Length: 100
Image (tube, rainbow, N blue to C red; front, side, top):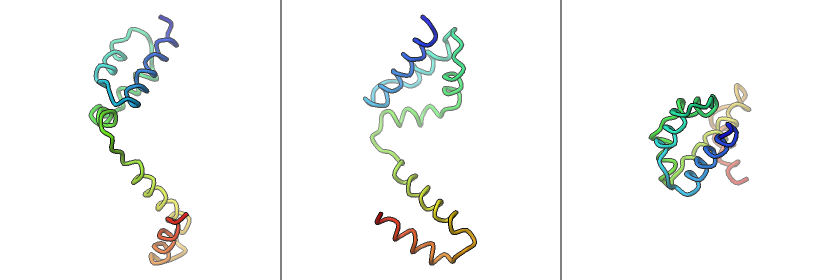
């Protein structure tokens, strides 16, 4: 099987696992690691991931995405104000920015 078709099939499998909440990431990882094809992008992706966290992302419906978004927003506001104002002004700006 040509390499691009194999990569496409593997990526579609991963997408399906994320979308449906079904599938085993360990089996998917093993199919990439045992592959005789040179798949450097996928192999580095597999080696650099916390398998338990990915499996939880597939199976569980909860996500910390909204929390991370708020943390990112607050850090962005803080960076904009660095050295210019007090904590009280930062607090007000964060609270007021939530409405928009």
